[in-house]
Image (cartoon, rainbow, N blue to C red; front, side, top):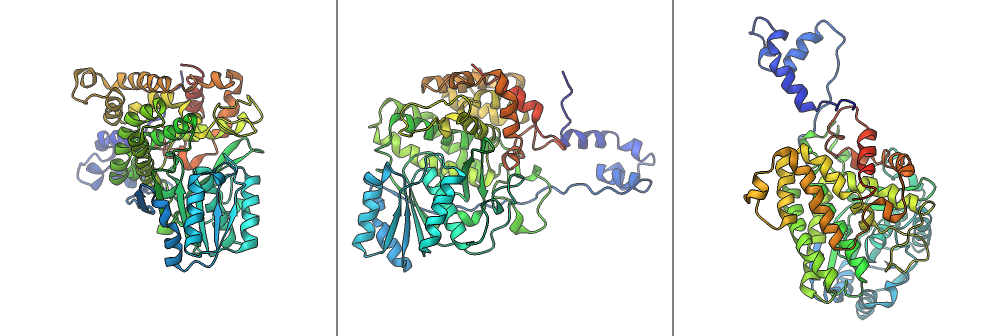
Length: 491
């Protein structure tokens, strides 16, 4: 077994313990400060600049409106904004249902001009994005309205961005190293989002995700400028969702919360940006994201099984919508990490590999829905991350078990036992929802592991927030990713 790389904290502790070797007289600054000891050595060697860690975090979220039938107000909102022409984005299924009908009636009641784009693809691709962008550029809208799940909202974000940046290439803003990751410096047009799933929380974030079939993985654009100016969360909007969509979307909520709460602390991220405008949207766990993420996790663990059992449980669906929004605010600043990073090639490779098609999804192509693709590695991911912060993972375990951290079955667990216990708790939870029991159940085999790892490695935006990878200098994560994926083949 190869040795595990030392963390930055362990290196600092070692320097501190050996400070007398660095300074025998005990009188210089090196005797009290390991960095001082390093500076002493630098007098006799080529100077080396240490990476500077982050010292700040930023929280930004959309304005939110939550309530029964609140989408009926949307026409007045756009009239108040002085909208001249609205681009309404949705998908071929939703265009016939309550959420879009309500939005259209609201716009017409206020005499607000609009055009409808109803070709948004479920799990959008670069091709479907370009279709929406081309349509939007031809109309030059003053305002945008997205009515749908994450696929619709993310497509509308992209259409807005590239309508303003009319001559830009798609890869100009896609996250590095896949794209150029250029900053967004121009003001985008107002976007309002009406979510129709309790899942992505996209109405609160500046993130937009797409699949790139030629690369066999997903990636995206992450910038606060993409964030909708208003999220209108109508509690009636998820009533038309099939059971399978409720489950997949709800799992996205759950893992948004779990990953943001267990991401590396914001002050462990390095290097810090030279300019505040370069500070990324995903920054690591922080005191504000922790509050939103833990509330969302508790609600998802409690209410998602209720929705799966009874899609008519209005209170449970209402709480899942709130949890989705809370988790969106949480991960919108903290970010996600391993489960999401690996989900991108799991979904992407499926189209040319296993060709698994999830029941309940009215699409003509193979699909492992996003929430399912995230959940498939969930048990193994948190077994891996548990040693990084045993107390946080102990708290997560107590939520899945529905007991207090002071209960003997939790409090008496050693730190080393938290990971295996959490693995079992998450696996049991997923099993109760009917989630496929590992990658083999959706058609992957051990022969696919290397390709899945290769598709995960470029996802630096999220991998750099992963404990054991993002906080270890020079660690690309390949060995750990291989181990986690192998542990996710079946459970």
